[in-house]
Image (spheres, rainbow, N blue to C red):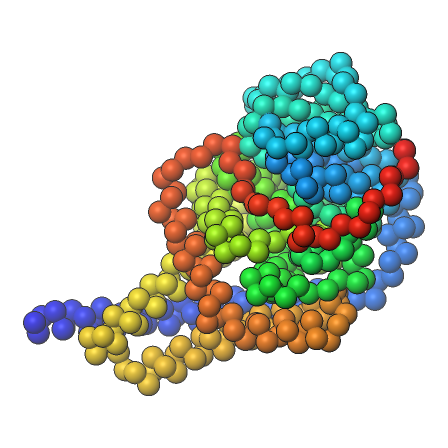
Length: 490
């Protein structure tokens, strides 16, 4: 028995020190991210919106292909397409890709936009391999720049690849079928591309994603000046999480060109670079992150000055899960995609050949983003085990736990202050106050739940799922749609 006690004390001695230094490192990293984001946001405050209009109505604005993969999006797809047909941009086409939907998505889109079958042929060039067979290609009698591909189910990545192969413009936008864009979204996300310095090019750009649950959609648009906060606790916590991830995480990483992900819900890419990289990977569940990592790898291997940019502006809005089971599975899928992206490009980890991507970005995403939930849950288990066998100093454990809870909550509150300072999406004082209160409770229930879901994903890494779509049950009442006024033909 004494031997076991000695082993227990020795184990806890070393474990406590490992966790202590790990936490110090995490605190330092997040403090740097927070300060960098605050500095960047401070520089951008006060830029007049008219600059977007003046710049993007000129001949320097490149034409765009907007690709919308759709799978069982009967409720939201029409509203999303309508919002795309009315965006402020000079020249673009919209390519909707129905990936073998099992609901009435195809029929609904054909009826709403008066689609007719075309004899268009897709040429399989550039990508390493083709996609699942395309059954039919449709055009719209109402909108000359709207097209629809109906293909066999192959997953979101496969649908995006089909859209890329049909697109005719040098840049393409990938957007989820349930996403609602701000009217100036394209103008904002294209700004870094047009403003690139001589000798530099932006090959991908993305912006913040807002949660639109409970807000009213009018003629396919959400009035971003009148965003209200829904009362559902799970959704409120996701709002806080999104603000922290976009304004504090991606904003600061993009400053040093080490951002490994732009939002799959809405992002723009240089088509020739994506084709050179081989298109979206159909064998991973995190196709958006994997593509960005591959582009970074291509940039470094070609010794290019190309960059991947990020905008803090809320350029699009999406529906967040209101069911714990749907949210749980979504986070499992995201964490699995994170691991797959890092594992497929593991040669970049701590490899000086890949510069800051290999020496900073990969360690950050692996040790903090990927391993963080596992270390946190292991910490909970060890504390309980240690208390049970009287191996832990109780005052020290209580103090340590309080510090971690307070730190996690204040991190979220700091992100909220950045949002209020720079974006001010939520105009009501009561909405901001509720966000502040919920941020204080995050460490007690929401973070442990999300850590469990991410830990669960580690046990499913061996199960290979090709062409997987994220299962998200849409509810007609979550986003309130007003009566539609038909969009004018283009």
